[in-house]
Length: 290
Image (cartoon, rainbow, N blue to C red; front, side, top):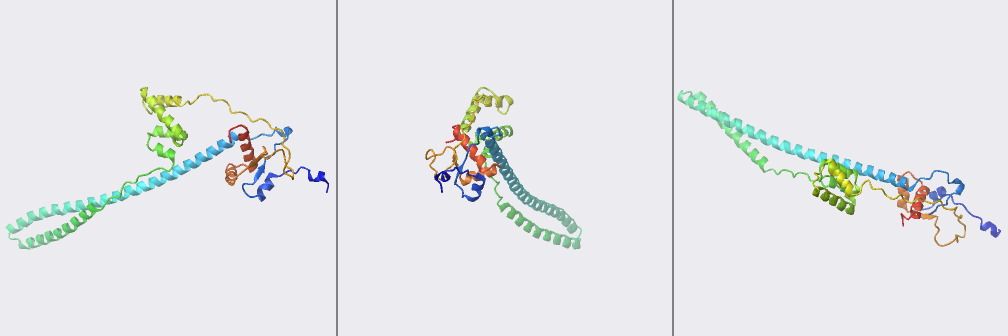
């Protein structure tokens, strides 16, 4: 075999490597030739935006599931208390009815005795005796209901920090926090939001008004122009990988190692590992990723 044959460049098909190599194996990103750069390249920001949207949808789904569970628990709590209250009221009504009936029976008994109507006397006394037994049972039931401890009201602590903060606010302020979740999840931004609130209120602006939210956002720097992100410069075509692997140094600028988690993230974002690797490489070159 000739030495020239041993040094011929070998092109690596990333799609085939992905099927055979285990996770955490290096993925070689070879830049396409300059004449092919007219193809549309997906910018890293697009992938990040898609990831943010996906995470926001998942957060909303968790919050909705949590809200439904809370509603079910609260409904069960109130239903149980309503049944207990209803039973207690029924017992009280029955006791009042029998006591009123006994008052009438006493008057009838007195009249029957004055008229020497002993048959009515016996009948009235029998009814009053039965009523006394019923009263004993009803009083025992009422005492049992009174001594039955009520279930404590459910207390919910949302697992989502955004919803945990929103639960403490007015509906309009909660809506603002949900629209800007970073001010609930980032401690530094949360402190800035609280400071903006204090400054706005100190200026005599009433909370939950249009003027209030405009002032808060102005203090937080909303609407300020930001310097545009540096654009990725087209890189020269990369040298192919040789069998010897000597290259130009120990670290290849076109070599990206994707972990198993990064491969899964690429799949969730609807991207191939190669596309994800290109985005990661672009971020590193732009100085936005170490």
